[in-house]
Length: 112
Image 1: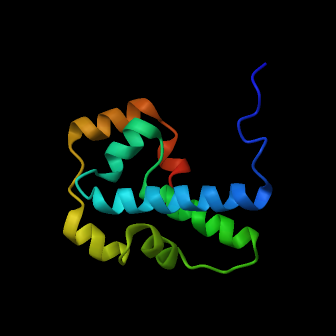
Image 2: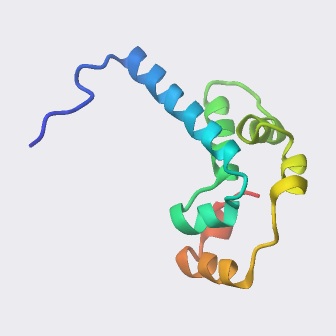
């Protein structure tokens, strides 16, 4: 069995590293406005909305009441409606077919 690569990292350092990785992921997604959420869902099973939902859930676990719109603004870097108006295109029939085929339960799991 291989050694645990995180064995030399204490809990505080691990949390700091994970936070930095999350921030980098969010910045990357903010810069890739050409990548639609449907594409992310089809390829990876999650999208920007999922990240914001997970952020909201993690805040709730800490007893912090974070509104959905505020969580989305953290991930999108702007109000969600502004992002949609600027960057979101209608999903093509091919994208929707791939979405339905890859995860038939995704609509139930994916909170809009």
